[in-house]
Structures are given as structure tokens and as C-alpha cells.
Image (cartoon, rainbow, N blue to C red; front, side, top):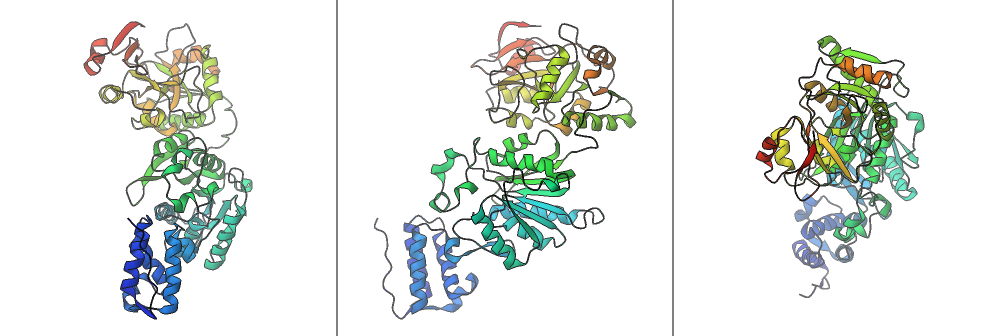
Length: 523
């Protein structure tokens, strides 16, 4: 089909006819919203709101010629916002053009969450909340926050001088109280470490594999450094999370945008040192950003001075014990906790030094990797490369409980559990104290609380006798109800394999996975 062309206009052109013709040209060029774009260009040329177009009636000849030129450029897939020189973002009209990422409507939902959170702060604690916007680009998030939360002190960082020039123009044009900084967001503002109330970021998060999927407006005109990120798109989010880790005060909030398929992976990056991790959707219902609250504590950067034991059968000590254990895990130290099988020794699964310390405390080598315990079933999907056949059915039937499942690990996760050959053994225990701790810490590397070659501990006292001061916090939940370890099923091959007989019988497992194969599993 031939591409429509615009006729030479008379002195004055009826607006409806001009819009119809422009819409046809833009549609033929593949513009996703041809009528809306034609109307916005017409409103720009006539200097009126889009809602007032019909009242204009006609295009004066000179204005129509300008309109025709702009429509022709839009048909070349030059972004609409580059032609009008501005973009609407919440209550703002921001200047944009070549060299800066154009703010998207979906980011307005992220801004809304941050603004609501800041407004909800106790005025006695944060009358002038301190906010840092990482990868600010045009300054959209920072300026929206500063103008809608007037007391906020907002710092915005970007490493691109061209983008920051646009942000400077927008700050000046709005009068917002925003302090702009040129620099690498990974290391910016060290003077604010541990002081910030909210860190917000919209980092680059597109993987190279997505390049062919992008519209020309994005691929050819948005700055590449604002789009592309290594590690299948996760390098940008990881950088913002690590910067937020040092910048935020205890209880401070992080809000970070991500790709619509990255929610589980970003939440997994927040498994240690964070709580209240939650995913949010944009106006189209797609997963768009994650929020989390920073966990810090007094003396959190140093090793605990002495071993602590908490009697968690006493409600008065239970909460204190959970808080101390969660803080110890965050510091990279070891804790002992009861499970529904035997007592376990645990560490942050994402801190390799902590996992190495766990193996050393047990007297065990890397050839016997450490399993990982999780506090919620939904975490499973974030930790695995894919969900193998039979996994969902086994989880639904036996979790929380005494079943360990071996699966392929998500390759994007930064952990070192031993010589795993790319696999991970996962379990959700059926012990409420363990689950409460895991919900505070995120995934933990946990093995039986005993020295290698000695019987597993079924009491806290037995675990202390074997592990001593290599452990910082002991949670005493009383004797465990079972001395039998969990059953282990390997789902990394074509057929499920029982690797270890345990609390669940072969008959119970075969009710769910009839093809279960047994190759002389260890007891």
C-alpha cells in the first residue's frame, strides 16, 4: 500500500481535514498512536490545549505549513516530545529533547508512591525528609517530589552531562528545591551515607536481547546510557540497590523501577538487609517497581562482642531474639535456629564470606553445598532459573514442611553456596520461629547445626556444645519435634530423583510425582 502524501494547502485549511490527513500519514508510518499524536502536534502549533482543538475550526495557512513539517518529522519516527520540546509528568510540563531520556507515564506511579510515603512520615521525625534520586535524567522524579512535598530536601544524581543540563533547565523552570549532582550514582553523595529517608531510582534496565523489540523512538533517540544495562538488564537495578544500602538510614525506603519481567529478580536482590519488600504494578497492570525498607542497627558494621542465647519459648524474649538474629545475619554472622526437623545453622545466602564461615564452623568443604531456606513460597520463583515439572505440585503439597527440592539456580543471583554446579537446594520449613526469621532476613543458607560427622542437634544446648562461639545468636525454641532430616528430591533432570530418604516416604512423594526414581538414596 502506498504511503499517503499531504496535499498543498489553501490559505486556510479546515482543522478536521488536516487532522484526518495527518493521522493517515502517521498510521502509514507505523506510529503507535497516530490520531493522538496528530492532535497534540496541532495543539502545539495553535498554542491551545488539545481539548480546545475543535473550537479552533481552521488552520491559518502559515500555521498549517508548520504543522505539515512537524507531521512529516513525526512520520520519520522522531519522538513527539522532541518536536514539541516538552513532556507532561504529573502536574509538571518538563523540557526534553535530544540527549535526555523522555519520562514515561508508568514512572508517574512510582512518583505517586514516593510522594504518598513522604507525606505519611511523622512530621516530628522527618519534617524535612531527605530524598535522593539516582539516575535522574530530566529530573522528573526529583522535581515532582520537591514540588508536591515542599518540605523535602531532594538531591538528584546523573552521570551524563547532557541529561543533567536538561535537569538544570527543568529545575530552573519550576523553581523546585532540588540539588543536582554530576557523578556516578554508585558512589555519589558519600556525605549522606546512613542519613537518607528515601532513595528513588529509575536506572537503565534493558537487556541487549531486547534491542530488536524497541520502537524507533526509543532505540534511535533515547540516550543509550539511559537504556542498556548488563547482567540481562539487572546491573542498573543492582547498582541503585547497593547505593541505597549505604545511603539510607535504618527504616529508610527504597523505590526502584524495573522492567515488567524483572520483578522477582529485583526482589531477590533485596533478600538481605531489607524488609517489607513489595512489588507494585503500573496503570496497565504490569509489574513496574519494587519498594523495600532498609534494616540497620547500632554497631551493625562490626562483629558482635559475645554469643547471645534467646529463650524463644518465652514471648518476651522471642521478639528480641528474632531482631538480634536478623541483625546478625545482616552483618554476615552465623545464627542457630530450630526447624521442623532438626536445629540448623544459618547465614545470609547472598554473603559468600558468611556461607564460607558456616562451612568452616561445621568442618565441611565446598563439595557439600549449603541448602537455602525461604520464608514464603513466592520467593521460590525468584531463586530458580525456571520452574521444572513437578515442582509446583510438590511445593503445594509439602511446603512448608520437610521436603528439600534441588533445582537449577537463577544465574543472575550473586551467591556462592559451594560447588553447586549451577543448582540450589530449597526448602520452606514448617517451624513458625524459623519462618518468622526468614521473613525478616530473606533467603538463608542453612545446614544442620552440628559438626561434620556428629549427630544433628535436636536441642539448642546440643548445638551450642558443638558450634560454640562460632555462632553469634542462638534461638532456643525447645527440643525439635523430629530427629529425621528432610527428604531431598532432585528436579534438575528429566525424571525426579530421590536423593535422600527423610521425613517424607517414597510413597508420599510418588503420590505427587509418580515418575520419582530412587537410586539408593542416602538416609
